[in-house]
Length: 399
Image (cartoon, rainbow, N blue to C red; front, side, top):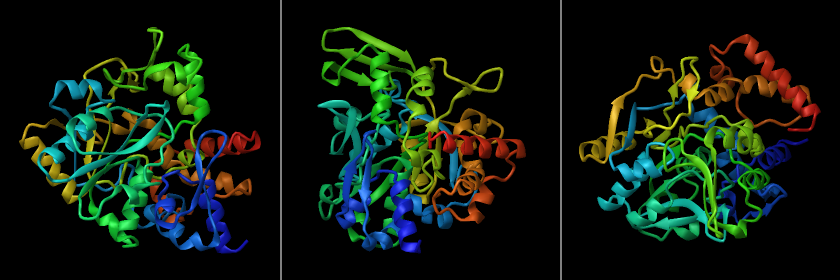
């Protein structure tokens, strides 16, 4: 197989669904059985794929530093100073508050982000928000497929400045497009925010969740939320007949949604938004056994200011009382135990590559050098178990 065809095959198989190839090249996108969109790539798409596609490994190979949590200017605990926003958000509401702050200070003209699709609340739409009220409507997690970059070129009006909120893979693709100066219109996006992401659940997983919540059809839904209204909040549905049903976050994610995610999410090198100006995740408390504690509590984010621009914005928002912060030490406060999935997924990527190659399968084009850095300090026993487990899943056709 020639290199161009290999690149096309890998970028298709490990597509993250960001949709940037559609915006830039007009590539056709098709929805498969699980509700995920995949590109119909041609040989002429290889240059774009090599530069921006997360599966091509360019961002990981050239911009990630090999550490567990990525490059950053500063790190802290933070939450929205507005109690309502903090309560409604999935965790601390920091990204929502920063987006509102940018609009109110006229530092951007609009915010590009996703929100629930009113016609089918298990799906999302990409919107351009210019008011506080519109941004607040997007508050909270959407545990479903999203393609926020598919129409982004059409959403951007020449001369205006935007903030963008997206998954780490969305931000990575957009950042690479900026760095390589492939499309001048991307320079109008002046701030990028991301959040810790453990994967995009499938349409099938969402149907299983609805069934568990005693909902037979999306047409019966009045309101669907995956989290929020507390921390971590509940997966909850209010039906048009007035009935309400909910499920604990831990159960909804661990037993249903998180078990059926996009293939690329299983092999992701950046689940914490390393290319964003600011990225946020849940700063879970730990139980006495050293595991994440999902007991309801006031929400709080671990916040990474990753660029100078991001750090300047965060400091200004703190001074203006928009967000409240506390010190946070990655080692002392043990983020690896608070966010074990992100640590284990990244540290085991080299083991997963060995497993996939032994099975004759494709793997994202991350360099051996960066994968070796990712696994520094990772126990040998864990590496072996992850490798064997992956081989078993390939044999059982679950990968």
